[in-house]
Length: 378
Image (tube, rainbow, N blue to C red):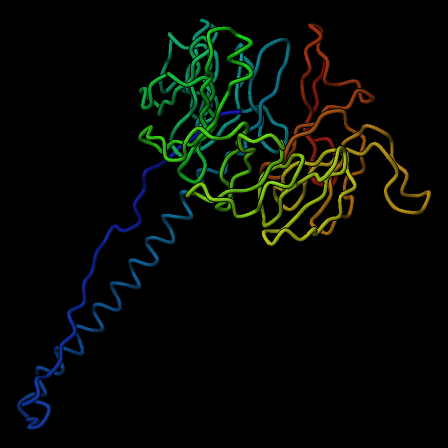
């Protein structure tokens, strides 16, 4: 619901300026063939040197970016065993033992957990505590260097070691593409506050850059954000980072753009996927749909899809489609999530996993073939 982390990396480690050497008019009209040979040779060597250095900088930046991307590829997954939380790798091997009272997903190399002493802490992939937060009630996953933190019913943002944006908002979401959704509630009673919630966007300094003028707002993805304006028609559209509508509010509800597509609904329980030109790439046909992630998206199916009997699927189940609309994992799950580094959390009552002795819903993990990689064991 909220999460962030920003490395603050600036890839401009080097700033080379090549001063162009141009002969003046006299030199061009009266060249000195022999006297200028040495100076021309030095100029040529200088240009080669600059070119080589630029190539070196290019490769340094490329390697740096690859390392950064790799370090953000957090392929550890939350599990729950005997009432405690830990982490497994993609092969289902336990790499951080289940000792925590609560645990969130790893992102950008760290994860928020509640340690056995009851405090929220930030741990690294080795399970080492980086920082402890005794006066907060919840920390969410990091994204772009920051994480949403909650204290009672107010929200702010922290980095790995300190409070960065004050805890003052009535709602807050993860930073994405440099901006984050925040909300305020106006009124003297709880009912008034619920009905008078408004949302806008802040930057990483806490400045309000898009005013509180939406009934609902989602993160920016691929330069666009899904919002519902403060109007009576209750329709949703997409804005750019200046707050201007790029896709007018004509949809009942919608998701976020990801991999060039966004799930939208023109009517109740008729979800499809559009591109940024508002063309339906996958026709409206699902009862609900998620964002594309790693080439697939989850969909909720409550009725037959297609003309043949072989396409009849179970009502009220989630499956996964590819970007052509082909069902690649048949609907059989009660709850699902996006794929992350090749795995997705799912819950399927038929398999007998997902409900522990305390009746809490927990999750198993599947790969893109629908194979179970890990499941809760009683």
